[in-house]
Image 1 (cartoon, rainbow, N blue to C red):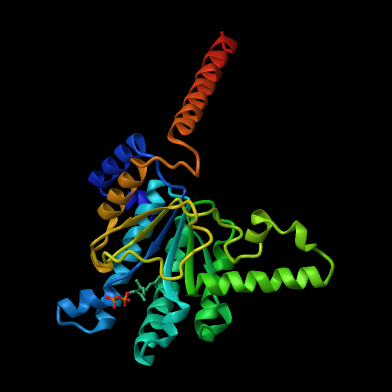
Image 2 (tube, rainbow, N blue to C red):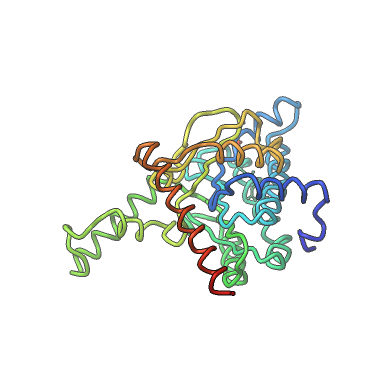
Length: 280
Ligand code: FPP
């Protein structure tokens, strides 16, 4: 199904209004927390919570894609999640299998490019195979880049980057004094993905839980009190509105940012006038 065609008119209008009035983040990362609590509150098993969480994933992916978000990264399974009861880990892995088996074609038709970050070799072989084939099939797509963080931990990724750098130094490909923030980033598993502009966490917890610690250095954080299975597209739009109302200073002063904005606006005004004169 084409998501633009199946999109409800009301949602189309809301998205258009958002595009006109807000600054849409290039990269949104989500810590999907609260599946278990959602289920427990309803007297259901934790697996039911994860299943309902998958419904939120579906909705958020579609909405991000039709809205024109370029990158969406979902924290689907942390490296610490392996410590959960075996039965719960099995449920999460089987949901992942179901998602990849049943939905890659639809994602592909909608130009979604699938990526994964994390300790790939620790995932079950069936999941590894499905992921590899999803990544391969969608690698040339130009729409939303959907990155699934699986068996992922930011500290694990940073330590791995240090090991790779050490190897390059030992081989003589890099000298220690040439290591900087720019080339360090190139050793992380997120090297092909821009840093997140907006990091959303559900369930009202103010923690980063070892997610994209390096990459989120200047990202805006939004905490929603909703549990992840309750978090749907309209809640995503609220998060985007909040993001858009903030001033990102990247360490500069507010006055500097305002001046920069003014000079960009002036440049684009001059360009418009210049093009208008050229076309006469
Ligand atoms: C945290 O909730 C959520 C997870 C550990 C897994 C997230 C998984 C999904 C949303 C479903 C599958 C996703 C994909 C992409 C196929 P929690 O269990 O820690 O909740 P709690 O803190 O209330 O116990």
